[in-house]
Image (tube, rainbow, N blue to C red; front, side):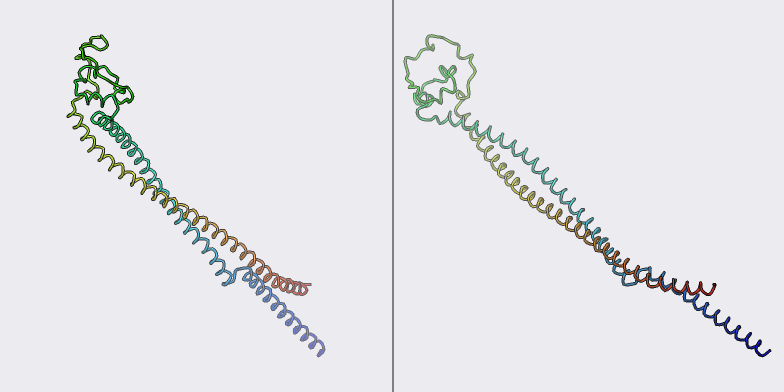
Amino acid sequence: ENLQLRYNQERDNFSTRRRDEKQLLNDEKFALKDKINLASQYTPQEQEDIDGLKKSIDECDERTDAAVNTYNQKLKVKTEIESKISDLKLELGAVDNELKAKTERRTNILKVLNPEDGTLLYFLEEQSIEWRESIGKVIRPDLLQTKGLSPSLGELTDSIYGLKLDLDKVSESEFLKDRDLLVKESEELKVQIDALEKEHDRLTNGHKNLLEELSLANGEIQKGLREMQRLRDEKEQAKLALNKELKEIKTLIEKRCLDLKEQLSLCEKQLSSFDN
């Protein structure tokens, strides 16, 4: 009877120990699972490193957006300058044409008012005859400025080479105008030419200034392009750094979890032996 009682007591003690050991193993099993779950997550330092790299990428995006906006504004400025240059060229061309025409006109008038020595016009003016009312009405204007014609006066008649014409019906050429009228027109043209030359200088200087502005604008655009490329490269480097960091952290997580999983596997085997 004492042996039976002792046996029963030993059996109960064994069962209690086995139950306690199994409970400890179960507790260890769940603890290991919690550790594995925690180990599979980023540590605070790892999360901080990842967040820092992601922030760098976001900042690159923000700075790139700002750089693109600045670049577009510079392009707009360049377009406006080019438009001004185009308009100014048209205006300058119109002034050039008008200046050329008025200068040519005044030059022709001055040739009439001040004929060059040796020309037919100089000879006729020196003879103080009324040549404008006779031969002047039918002579070719270009001959009046021609040298080497060896002009001389013969007997004046009311005919030219025996041909009589009603010269009053012939319209006056430029050189037949009243001298005073030509002088007045020449003076007016001089004033207009001076004003046109000033306007030409103003437009030329404006064109030069706009070209300088355009050069600066192109420089700013190139600078903007380089800045955008630099930011794209910086972002690409940040992305590479992030990917590298994520791979390294993944390797660390796998290593952390592997050790704990080995411990969990051993614990589950021990628990299985209890069931068997």
